[in-house]
Image 1: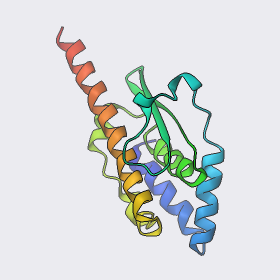
Image 2: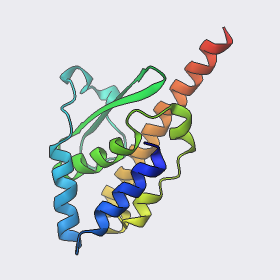
Image 3: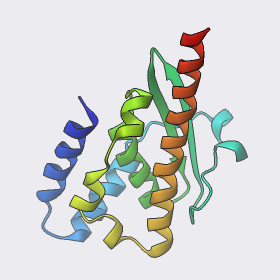
Image 4: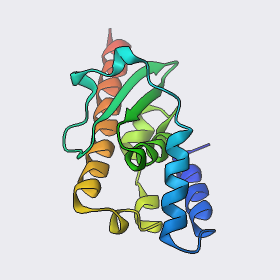
Length: 145
């Protein structure tokens, strides 16, 4: 699926909930289903700066697409990172860099987070895009050699 298609799926999914308590519960459930990150990736280097809670994000390039793993010490934050990984998991670096993240505004996620959590969300997106940029540069360098 494309990033756009996955976002549309998330928007449809969230439209089924009547209020934000139900949406929060859904986000928390998504966090509970996030595959565990290997302890070796829970390093200072993989900690996302700008998050109120601890969020570890690791990425590898596999067959031209990005493979992410993540964890957080806060259950809601873990759900938010699970949502982001759902969008970006298995996508090409170029597609991640060009992606417009419309679902965040469409489901009004930022408006329903505390200011520090909203900043954390933006920090997570920024880090995902930085990984994509680094791998895109690596792919470009390899194709030129």
